[in-house]
Length: 164
Image (cartoon, rainbow, N blue to C red):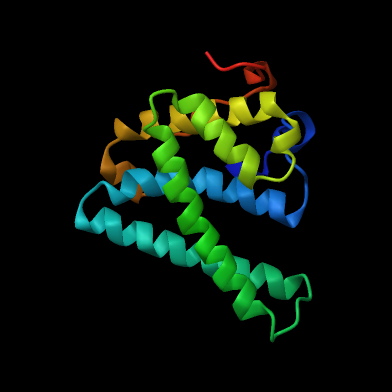
């Protein structure tokens, strides 16, 4: 959660500071973690499922806190759960493309509000996500299961107009 709520991302990378923008960043932060856990042992895959369930529960709680009517909450939660699955699948496909940074940046630009108008931000966040995927591949599973997630560094210096 903390990784997805860094003010820098909203202030410098172009992501809109809206519920949709924040949800998009949470999914982006979850993507490398879920990708790594789902490739692991049965225990890791179970933790990936529990992490997904925690995301869905958090969405439900947030919607209720925002005052969304009880009748609309289940429909919106279902939509958020589908978005998590669909985006993680699309991000995973992009990560395996021959040119992963531009492929993932295009996916991010189409799914995270504000990034369509901020290609440098989309490229930087794509690089961040891909670096995190690579970093997590080398992390021992026990550390991940204990909640020690080594995200790649991200700073305003990572803003770039064209991917390398």
